[in-house]
Image (cartoon, rainbow, N blue to C red; front, side, top):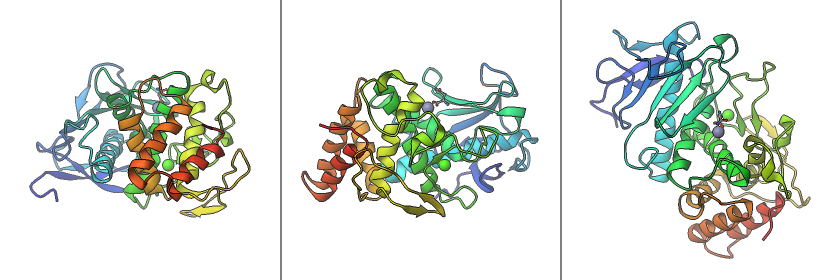
Length: 330
Ligand code: ASN
Ligand code: ZN
Ligand code: CA
């Protein structure tokens, strides 16, 4: 598939040994994916720092002490996200124009976050607490890169209910990319940030099956939810996506037990993750716009479901019933 394209061997922190793009020889440049580049900020907080380069094309050693390791994880996450959008949705790059973005790792000191920035068309990763738990897992990379896709499509305003939908879109495709990657060291799940130990006690940052497990995220809609932090109002759409994918359970996915309660107490069957991904992507790219709220997201996904599966089909009706399960009505 990538014959003639330079690829090196990377020893990542979270995903084992992986292959990354390294052309021209040898820099961390992915010539198969829009020349996406990965830079080492070396604890700086502006500019691009230094493009990772290496004489023998073997990168990182799987530990955070080796500066290349975070670069490997970030480059691998960007590669997987690119491949997911291309193979599942036929989208070539963040803007759909085949042009790569770039990643920057080792941002600042003990920086416990990662972010997408529209102005540089780039994403940035901190090293986490103690500079040892970089925020470079597959799901975090896919979350940040998806902020770029959202900006290029629905451009959901990052506040109020549209902000929650923006955040949820990043979590939804973070989970989708992680499942699609099928990496043995980081198998797919409906958890966000389970690898980066952001809470210091082994718990993930967010749970899509029951978002309130984090102590702050919302499981279902209520009037006024637009006033809560977008990383918590996102819970409603994350929960919708979980229920639409898997149903209300109980169910085991990759050995993790999920039991996802519905707000109306009625069970929902799910349509499978692949269908749920198609519905959300089509809704995002064709039917949502900057001020879409939860009621608008319901309409958008029903339009998408009608296109994909037909109006008033069982699948279409399951989409409607799943919104009712998170208290979003007509
Ligand atoms: N990591 C965070 C996010 O992508 C950064 C932020 O709050 N914008 O949501
Ligand atoms: Zn985000
Ligand atoms: Ca995950």
